Amino acid sequence: MSRKQQLLKRHRRNKRIALLIGLLVLVAAGVLVAWWLPLLLAVLLWAAHEAWFADHLFYSPKDSYGYAFPVGSEQSGLRLEAGRLLLDTPLAADETLIVGVDLKSTWFGRFLDPAVDVLGLEMPDRQVFERGVAGRRYLNLTGAAEALAAGNIRLRGRFCRIKGQPILWRFRQPDYRQQRVMVIAPHADDAELAAFSLYSQARESWIVTLTAGEIEAEHYQHMGLPRAEAARLKGRLRAWDSIAVPRWAGVPETQCVQLGYFCMQLQAMQAAADQPMASREADLSDTRLFRQFNGFALPGDMDGAPTWHNLIADLRALLLKARPQVIVLPTPLLDPHADHISAHAAILEALQGLEWQPDTLLGYANHLHDNDRWPMGDSGAGVALPPRFESAVEMEPCSFALSLSLQQDKAMALGMMHDLQPPAPFKRRVRRWLQQLLAGRKPSPYGENEFFRKAVRRHELLWVLKRD
Image 1: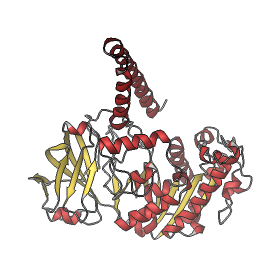
Image 2: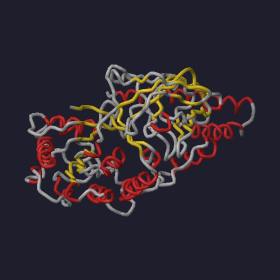
Image 3: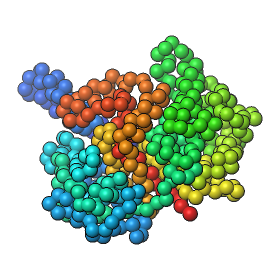
Image 4: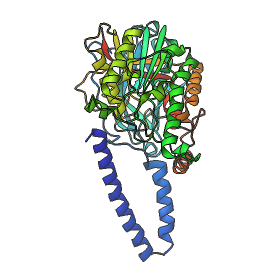
């Protein structure tokens, strides 16, 4: 059982216990006070749950995050005086800057999202944390080097207090935008969510999407299509998206590749490398339907078999053709999605013994084990470091600052993705309305899907997994 499954199991058990206690309280209220009181209390408790307690947070907000950063990355001399960040050391504009702060939520911060306002920038920033936060958190000040060095940045707690003195870490990395970049996307939209700013500005970019993402096609079944036909239509649309949408960022069509393997089957393929793994829902065992938009042939086109061996052969052919200096791929250190974990493993296997080796591997996480709302806060806000409580593995963040126009271009790219277009379920829309009304949360101006809020931000955050 994965860590996320264990956390979900514990969360559901606790929820069942809370529900049982709530039912007992309602029954007692009906017997001892009035018959109508349980109905009123049930509605109020449900609204309170949706507004304040519906976040999937599988750890205590009082836990301090734990990171181990590379030796030599800590920068001494940062201090907080009367709310102003002061640093005497000059900084480079393109450095990744992370500031550790100790936060303590106020009473209001148990019901309204605590945040740290970063003032003194051209556009103010607000980085949001868990309700009831109490412990170490990490602000992302990438892009603010000039203002920080000039002493113009002020920090202000919103529904929380900043305790003690902050700590600065600075990470100096090459300008990856001047190199050949290949983004590995398990599904169409993963590349845009994680690394749109990087691949849209890189000297040369390749986008390689591993699966068609054909499952969970209920939206297309509502059009009257049978389950298998709906899945095939969804897969074809997402295959088209994976080729067409990067063109918005200037990536040539010939450098966008859809491998057409089947969603949520990569793990099974990896476990039995020679055995074809058919689609769960599309009634297909041939990948070539979803490869029709590719501009050149690959080894897997010979038989269309959805096997791990074919996937590795396809990736090796692409690596030799593109010869990327930087590969951007999911990292299992943070991202628990089964397809993402297998995508990471596939790239590492494809690189074994290959004559071309990249200089750098950059990891990303579009999903988290224990907080499905991260990055917290609104569209356009900065991306603070995600929750992490295991400091045994050294982590090196690599962050990119996005201008407002680049954020808007990223939002438009996500808006072209068919999988992000269907309306949210009714229950989720009601929950968001209650959270806006009672908890002060704002909808994204770019779209209804949650990824518009999560991904269209002041920063993109990657992690250096390997660097020569």
